[in-house]
Length: 476
Image 1: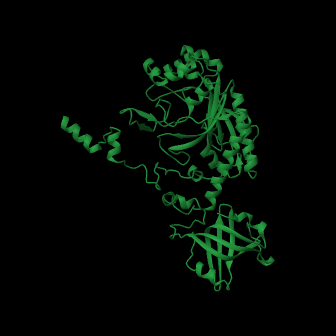
Image 2: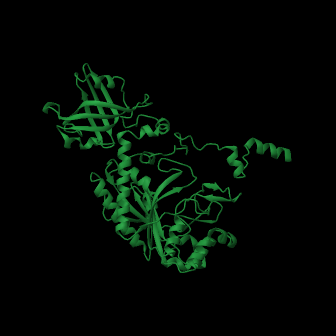
Image 3: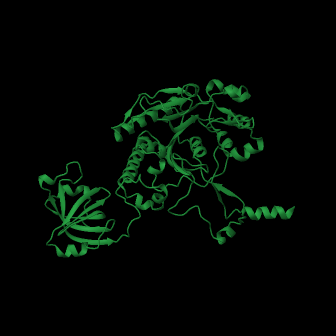
């Protein structure tokens, strides 16, 4: 828009005419004077139409909150008695000379000037594009952008490169349930959406990248809760020729810098971060995500800690073994022989580490198995048969056979981290378009049915539960 000035810059134009554009935040009629509060992405300013400006009064008569306007006015200094020092533009006022209506607005279903906490989640998410207009949501999204940009710069300045990895990948037994995507070209076969870039980032290490990071989208078909979503964002990191200490110290330095730069009002309880073994955490705090704050009533207290020395394996209900983090982890060097001989399995410790903040796990990682024979032994302990190992992980074993460097990494839950920094109760408050607690998108009305034509192209037939029961009954 030609000659438009952002509201936050109006102070530089006192005594001059200026053109702004944005939303009507508040309208107040006081007889012959009509006051408006206008807002754009940078802030708010009060405007007034004086009695002698009949044309502006006529244009303004039908205007209500949330209409979108272009306004030309003179930036005036407020009288000393009317100055509001605590507010942006509290010392100026825009004398409205001309109004151009860019778009009208129907009456909104809720007040966007509040923080939204008085509203139910359903209505906020149904009209999320309106909910985002409120100050709290704008601050959350802009804070997230600032933190993410700093992270990108931090790793770039330390020799890392950001590499995008595929969204359509292969379903492998890594832990959580996959979201699957049917293939039209290969009927009866499916892609999987990535639970994380785990395998790809390890393959990048085989490819000689050495220092990788990514702000990665991840999807897991699991039950949701306040700090979890069907799709979420990870800060994903992998490094070659490293030990646990290298990864932990680099990430700890970044976490400290982020808090000091963007949240100076918050205090980190202890630097360097304390390190607690899994055994001690369970014995003292009865949790592997211990909340070690000295004062849990202090909202600005951040108590980081590392939890280390996790058991590699744990028993399943069926009596077999499963992994505690992921199957690609390496054991502690002193337990490597136990892995290869598949003995004393319950005592094997993994080279794994979690970063915990105020009782929430915000990240976790490990040193990886980079030798194919060690990875095979881990998969055998987990109960995978030789044929299945080759089917599911043959690409990894093949890659490792061509000379994989020792490597390790970590992934942060970026949504959860931002939730804690912004003192929010749910990750939905720091995500622009989240799902509900039941995994639904009320704004887009998804998940939804698809047309019969699309199902036919995919060679998929949907049968209801009733149809299946009827078929079973008929077969009997």
